[in-house]
Image 1 (spheres, rainbow, N blue to C red):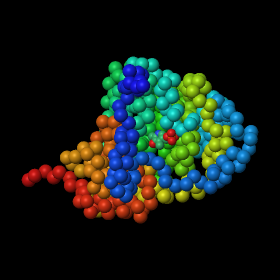
Image 2 (spheres, rainbow, N blue to C red):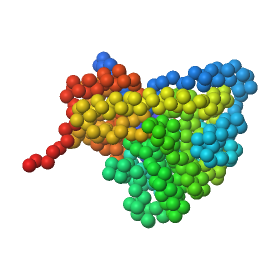
Image 3 (spheres, helix red, strand yellow):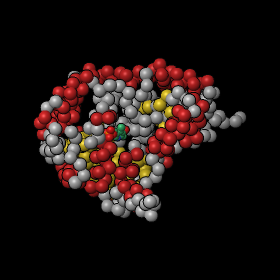
Image 4 (spheres, rainbow, N blue to C red):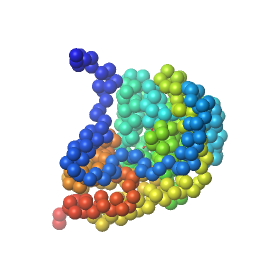
Length: 400
Ligand SMILES: *Cc1c(COP(=O)(O)O)cnc(C)c1O
């Protein structure tokens, strides 16, 4: 019997197709054709989780006291490890009971935060391009998403002066993320001060995603929203262990900041899940207290790949901006071809998978995102294939 007569709920049918799912189909087809794929598409870290974290998990799994339902709000010791880490890293004290909440990865938390605070029809400001959960989460909640177009000439920063006051007055929340996925842009401290002033002026909730807090290079230190005076009064900040500690599969993240907002998210989650397996919370505590050399190792791995790939692109005429953080390069498409067509052409002719920029919204058109998730040998192979296939960046030159 077919149940076709039961359509999905409006909140599902309103969603645009998830481009990564479509990309997966195309990858499967290319694989069937016998292509050796080099997948630089997703932001899936390729390194192993640090050994002390794996060992802590192994020990904690053997402890029967971890086998039952964990506390809804996360274990007290993980919450304390979060606020200790935060104080050490940013010099800001937080209350581990009211101002920190463990999450099953930050994507879960971001989407549920939207469901906890956004009503159908509420206006939510979201940059474009953006990490998909930043617009899909609000869309699931029924929000009217107002796109803020990021531009290269503004270093992919939100320009608060271009937001019409009527839109700002009607907006309930702003979702944003620096160091940024997909553009790899970073924001100076003054930008965060502008964001807080904007939120105070128009009474807007700031939802900042700082998942690249530690993936920064050349001495650059990303800013936390909560370091800014007034930041905690207007917002929350999402963090993840996925990227820094190569723990994407473990599903551990957390949110810190405004206690009223965190309470709302906690209430919703109490009705949805039981939180993270207590043994993994133990392991996550270990990750947050690892010595800095682990971070330096990860940072060096990505910055070495970044430098290698930028040089390779330069040899093909491509000027790619050198990012100070994240695990991505944001690469312009050759003139005259859009991002979907370009990504497909590259996949079909070389077996190299990159993400079309429009997967991150209309503002990502004419760019592709390349993830630094393979070693330099493999990245070199990818670039050799791109070179052999004849791809080059030929800027349109004005005719004389
Ligand atoms: C990778 C990434 C996340 C991480 O999501 P998790 O669910 O914690 O694994 C969140 N936000 C952005 C912008 C990301 O790039």
